[in-house]
Amino acid sequence: MTHVADRATAGFRTTYGVSPAGRWAAPGRVNLIGEHTDYNDGFVLPFALPLRTVVAAVPQPTDRWTVWSEVSGRRAEFGAAEADTPGRVTGWGGYVAGVVWALRDAGYAVPGARLAIASDVPLGAGLSSSAALEAAVLTALVDLGGLDLPTERQPRLAQRAENAYVGAPTGIMDQSAAIRCRAGHALFLDCRDESVEHIPFDLDAAGLAMLVVDSRAPHRHADGEYASRRAACEKAAGLLGVPALRDVAVADLGDTLSRLPDDQTRRRVRHVVTENQRVLDIVALLRTGRVPEIGPLLTASHASMRDDFEITVPEIDTAVEAALAAGALGARMTGGGFGGCVLALVEATAADDVAHAVTEAYAGRGFAAPGHHTVLPAAGTTRLG
Image (cartoon, rainbow, N blue to C red; front, side, top):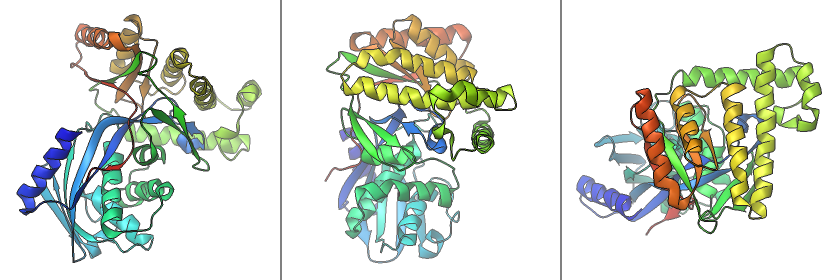
């Protein structure tokens, strides 16, 4: 955290010749369990990563926003006219403009600002680098403008920035995790009513850690396949006469599946219904401190994503298989699929060995070497001063 914050400060001073008024940080996230349940009005259980995006900022008196990015080494600048027209600012700057638009559209007097952004959240790895950026910018602008925006309302505005301005159809989970997570906890989020509960997830006390493996697999057909899965779920809910697949109980699954017209639709529905139940089962285990027992549920989730929802790729499956063979208590893909990251629940002392086993398995298959991080659940957005 200190290193990335210092980089944001240094970039700000180099770009603007002054010191920032403050620095604000937001985390990347992984989803412990609950994949493709969000747009089905279901349950998810993300936690925040120690990997952070930091925004250094200072207000300026005009309705203009200037942003420097460490990743691109460039500046983006836009005024109120560009901010008020969704899609007008493109590329990474569009996420910043989208936050300004969402706040202004909600009636807030957003201060003009100069900003500098640095990040340790890997891009394109399925760790929600975009939500981390939106959350950090949102928190900075709310503080700079003294805006009366309660924390519980902030995720929805950040999501609107991505959905309506940038044009990416994400659910509410990523922004909720970036803004609302607590250290040592997972965020139990009901995607229908947006209620949350902070579930103790003290890996350290259990002698465990979470290994996050970046598969480095390119996202193959991710946008089109994501849209097709979502359409299939919505069509199935219509056929079943329920508002969303969240309303199908596991106990009724056999009868429910018999009412659907084809095997593919049945498998899509089975994944969502059983995945929702896995979220509830893991929450129940964590509430009573039985952290090691969640492992088999993680692995069952991966099998469901692989076989029923068909969203894994060979690199992802290889990482899961290698981690389990090396002693992980459970492992699964996390994120929307077709690339991204794998979670492996491991004994803290075995994290390096499991990571090495995955790397060796990749080499044996001729895949590009994966990346990895060993993490504990971290806090959401913070002001660093």
